[in-house]
Image (tube, rainbow, N blue to C red; front, side, top):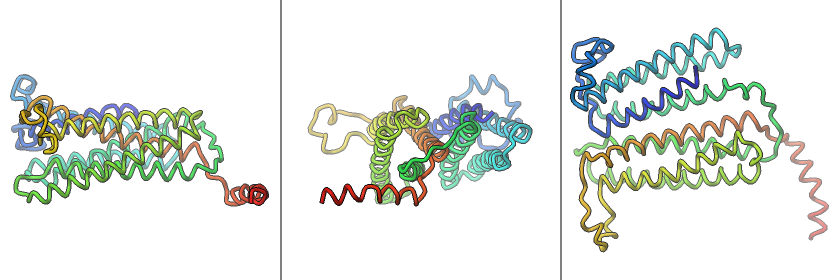
Length: 326
């Protein structure tokens, strides 16, 4: 059930990003109904063959309802089959967060509020991350794993947790950039762009640093090495998507104007490339977040930091060799 919830939540994030990319957020002005109909009884012909923005917005609502039902089933399954009390409470937390996200989405429609839309965009990845965390801790290997002691464990764990935090901060900054209004001063937009680029650079450094540490010390551990490779691939793809997103929204940088292709480039607002590149950029950010989180959780389960006495013993054992070198 946890894996099924993860598989349903990611398309919900993608369609949510598509709602913002196509500016379809207010295509349906009421909530929880859809143009006066019960949301589940809205005529499917009007939904499928009607305007595109209504199709996207109502589809987002239906996907959200499906995720809510799966979250309820997850809590039922956890209460029936999960012996760990804290895991059962984590399942309840998933349901509560999904419910809060649904209410935020409805409130955003009723009040037509940009700040609530920004908050809605920030809570969505948190729901996805908690679903992935629950799928990780309920996996069969989690219960069967026997942590091994390693002096490098704490460094890997701290680095993975820091990478997860930076990835979420980057998503928050991205949500503010996505919802900046034309009433904002250009300096505000510029400030968010600068911070977005700075945090992106920090995230790239942390991801490659984490992958290098795992590759040099734990390459034999597929539960750590494989997601580390996926994380590097996602970051590389995200850099490309970020470049395409900027290009399709704001054009090439001024220092490229000397080239003919840049000088003649025309921004096509609402083009398929602009919409899908931006949506993919947002979705990839969530994938980076949950992949870093999975590595952090796995490292905490599979690795145990060496006791202080053992580390001191290692240092003491190396002292004669150091004295000899001196």
